[in-house]
Image (cartoon, rainbow, N blue to C red):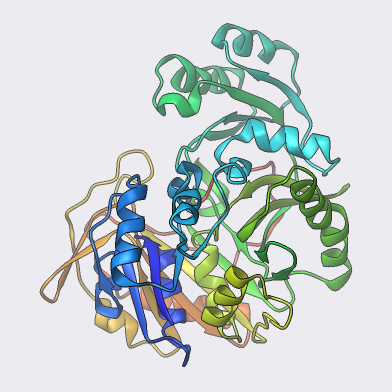
Length: 433
């Protein structure tokens, strides 16, 4: 197989790394890629908004499959463009991708098909109405922008002043453009978060290893929401009886809803869940693999990832068993100074060889560029330091030993990934990755 991966983050680096392990794969390309990916696959420049350019590239390379990493091309309709040209792609149509692209669409979908989720106080396209509604809600409150905001369009707060200021940023200052034209106000949910991702072929699906990510910027779930500061996966993270309930009350009703509304879904579907005292509830849908959940999932993946993706595109997942190794995996995100509000870029990265030399560690690049043998930062989330071991404690120890060898001026990372596993105070949901 010849496979083109669309994207430039740590998720895409992990995908390229795993795809190359398949004996059935002849070539893997990535567009636009990053500094680390360029060591593992040939990279091509691409504006992720340029759907025609992506299709032209896939056609020129004669890629047999294109796998889309980030949400923006999917929400913009890349799968539709490829379908028009008869090009094979793993990713849902633009209409189906509204499950992630519009929080309002997703919420109404869940309500129509009685999928457990947080109660909604209201959906507003007027800032005055949104401000006024703050007088009649319970706290903590979740304020969501309707559209895609790269993980920064959600606020969980117990402060009316903070909620009003966030509404102002979204609707009046328009910091996120059209994505903030409408806002949702909904109840904050307490419990533990869980990322549950399936791969669909239009008819059936397989479940990938469950993960738990950490969206807040700082230890103990303090600070602003981010695209994700780290994730972990372990063999005991999801008891069988709880997984059965998730499948019966959330996954199957979602698939039935997609079928009823004529949304033929081929690709990854991510369920961001809160495990509450009343049972699992959906915080969000994502229409692709999460980042950094992908890194944790693929570190444990004990199956041919490339073959599974190819079979999903062909509508032939029936014989695939997405097995995961026993033990645990951890991915710690190293972020630039100032992330998420105002990341400083252009800083040299050193210590990568020493970090990669730690037994059991793997370094996935996200916001990097390569000049010769030197690497520099290009974004907020710079690296994902991954590790796999017999248990969570051992995997965390390896990841943090490796992360400690990396030097980037002003960079920061959480020290509690895979270590702090206490229930969250309220939903810290945000479109991740």
